Image (cartoon, rainbow, N blue to C red; front, top):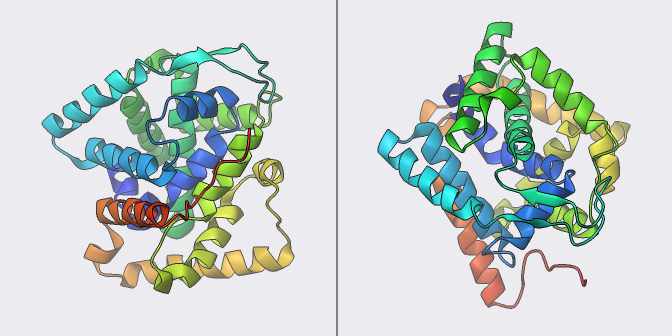
Length: 280
């Protein structure tokens, strides 16, 4: 079921940005990733590489997936430390680790929830049994990266109850850098000039899928006019999906990810970084 959902290009191209926006609400998740990234000044290069790794595990051979998992395991070994400043409900000095089962679950949770959200919005609703199968597949995906199965909720219903509770808890909050960078990676994706107008639709749909609390934390405005436009756009995409050739509607997105990283590199070389980091 995970392969069926992630095989939709519209899902594969959009779920990552939403997952990152929500995932950053756990300061341990954001800081641990940011401080230990080899490409902190090239966020789209890092995100493109991660997205391609995920697709290799989703769709590749076992040997290809095993190579990715070995690389990621080695990278995660260096992701360990303490928060240098307060973040949400977590005070400075709070420890974090890529091998923390709770953080592993959170990372998988935001990806799975975002993936399901876009599939049901842009393709079709999943049936009850499909949702449970989808969640079981994501739990298995987490296990491949070292997450203990015991930390994961049993069913999709249990998962959503846990997810909604955590999203509404006092633990959730944003560092200033997370707010700045999160908005950048979600809404300033490098694309060719001719495609820039399409990003208005991308950004509208992305903001429309976010829970109200997430929009508030990022300072993203929403009103009735935007809601009406969001419903019209998503309805048009969903209605046109059955008419799209299979080769267009389904498949991997590696070429798109590579193109994004390439445009980012060209802009940086020209002295125009897509997401300048805020001053400390």
